[in-house]
Length: 143
Length: 432
Image 1 (spheres, rainbow over the protein chains, first blue to last red):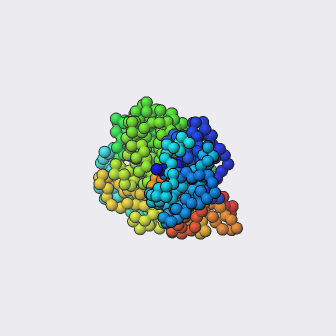
Image 2 (image 1 turned 180 degrees about the vertical axis):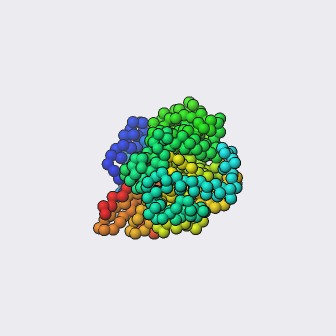
Image 3 (image 1 turned 90 degrees about the vertical axis):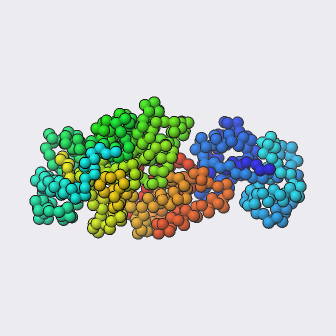
């Protein structure tokens, strides 16, 4: 039920994001989704890619600090209120969102929401109870 | 394992007697042969013939690095140049270079003293020793080289630099003992990783590290990453070079070769002896040097005595690892700050040897200390909240340890320079 996400430490200096993306491109790793969280001093880049282990290895080889964390990917119809209903379900279960980002899949019909919750196991239970579609690692990779 | 057991295990009272005899002889010789000391002794009405106890040394004035510079190049030599067989010089990165000389006997003694340290660390004539200290005017390379040959080990005089080649040779020549700076040993471990070489597949067993201050944390990391036993050794060119003191296999403090050096540890401000076990500046008097004796040389190195006897059987006093230099001490907002304190806090938080740099600036007449820290996996989070909490934790721990506030700047791994030799982790931009 969990999807692996790559997190990379970024110093706020020019060209680092370009370096990461071209490193991944050179190694034919495809980025499905990404988000950057930043402060004045540093940033955290989070990526969903098709080849997680390869991505970690090549980024480490290129001197980046890399971590792998589990996130939850929820698929909802790409229409008004899609995200709102998921968040309501989560709130009712008294679970907090640490961070989230989203992308629309190729067909354009559905949106994929990537979540990191403070209580991951309970979040899965709550989402399943309300019949939300949680994507597996394989599904994400083949999207 | 001892090199000169009868001397290294000399009973305390005999050692004191020997030290006094040699001190008297040294003071007489410099008082006769070196105008600098002769003039000083006369001015202070000090008679080298009236030294009756080791404590009498405390009446004699200190010798400073500046005194060596003022007498550049040969002014402090106590023998004619024809009796000098070797000259070394310290780099002069912080000012004018200083020059030291060695007689034939000095070289013999020096070799023996280094052989003692190699033996203490576990090196035997069967070992293959790779000396990655610079050869040249710096005492490190030649000092270790002569000691290792004296011991009968097989010496690879590779000198410093070219890390990949060092590793290649280490692998091909089946090096068993490595001599370099501790930070260079870690750099080697990094490069081995890059080259895809597993250090455990090598023959390396011992590492003798010196020429810069390091920490117990760094020793643990070196031991684990290179699969060796790392020992600390200490020396400085003004006094002789490597061989002044070194750790035995107990790895718990450096035995001073007390039959050749008389050491004091003094409060850098009051210049009075510190209480046993307390940190102070190391002051050394040579007892046997012929060409270049020094009286009460202020090393600026901070350390402390470890007064308990060592299980290894050596009677020579041990001192703790060098804790930095009294002139590395930064005064920030009027508070004394030692880089080693910062290192200790970072180690505690990261769990590995930190790579960091200190930037000192003055903004609006106020000092500002920024600690740049390389982010390693153990301190990196995907959550901004946790990442920022870590920065706050470091700030708080630093503030309580140092007594001043600091800025923390996280930087990417391997973005800070690695030091080979007496590196400086401090950038002081203050224009006073």
